[in-house]
Image (cartoon, rainbow, N blue to C red):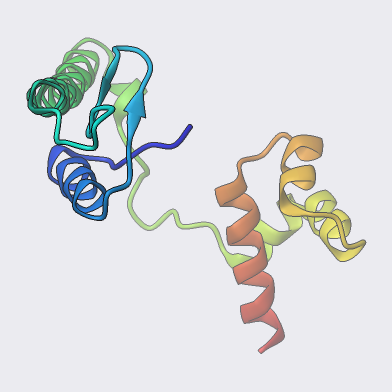
Length: 139
C-alpha cells in the first residue's frame, strides 16, 4: 500500500499520470479505481477521489486552525507553558554535545541513528543535530 501524495493537487496529478500510462490503481476502502475491468476511465471513482482529496485537505487545515487556537488559549491562561525559548539562550555546541555524550558514544560504536534514538530516548532530529555538530567540530 502506498500514498499518492500529501495534498489534493499532487494526488490528482499522480492519479492522472498513472491513468494516462494505463496503470490501474485500486483503492480497497472506499472501493474505487482509476480504470475499470475494460481498461476505461472510471469517472465515478475520479469524482470520489476529488471529493476525498478535498475533504482531506480541508480537515488538515481545520486541525492546524484548532491547534493554533488551543495554543493561543493556553498562552492566555498560562503563558509560561507557551513562552518559547528566551532570547540569547542558545545552547553552545560543546554543552549540547556533553549533554548527549551517551548518544555520541553509541554512534561512534557504529550503531544506527534509530537504535541510538530508542536507547537514549531522543528524537531522530536530535541524532541528526548531534551528527552535524560533531562534523562541524571536526572541521
